[in-house]
Amino acid sequence: MNSREFFLKITEKWPVKILSVAAAILISVFYKMGTLETCSFSVPLRIESADVLVPASSYPQAVKIGLRGENNSISTVLEEDIEAYINLSKYSLEDSYRIPIQIRKKGRALGIEPLEITVEPADIFVRLENRISRAVKISPSFRGSIAEGYEMTSQLINPSTITAQGPRRNVEALQEFNTGTIDLEGRYEDFSIMINIINNDPLIVTHGSMMIEYHGTIQPITKEIRRNNEAGEQ
Image (cartoon, rainbow, N blue to C red):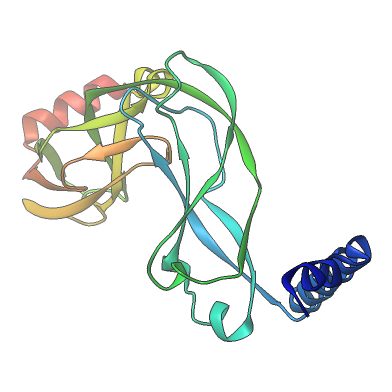
């Protein structure tokens, strides 16, 4: 068989041959896809490029990641191998936006094929505001009463302020941070304790230690002060 006859032979009914090859490839792909396994887990949602604008409304702190691939491959992928994040670099004005959630593969997730990754939700709707920071005073919270016949004459909070950073309106509206509860019940002498600072706004970040030293000075109430207090009550 010369080269011309060979060429004619292999090109004979070529549409049918091409369709057969394509069908075989599709069957192979569908079969392989049908044998793939799935798994899911949750990962934290990170905020990237938040130098100017930051979220000013609530958003999910974690998202659901779905993996689809060969069982012996996806079973090795752990939560830390997938990052979910939103990137704020292209936003420059305070407003509300629908921002897509992006995925980044790391570690054991790299090089796995086939690997289909889905994220739920696919995007979030969030308001962005300028990030500002300022010093906010710390106020102690108490419970109980000092022992009868005694009074607190002075107190010292160290440090007395802490830097708060976050969306503009939240930080501007913040008047103070309260401490954890300081128990005064039955106290009759000076005391010092370390107590934590309470931050109830998840959109505000504090810089510095979240512990302060509280010192209270307690002294007996003198007869003159007692007479003045009694006179004021009459």
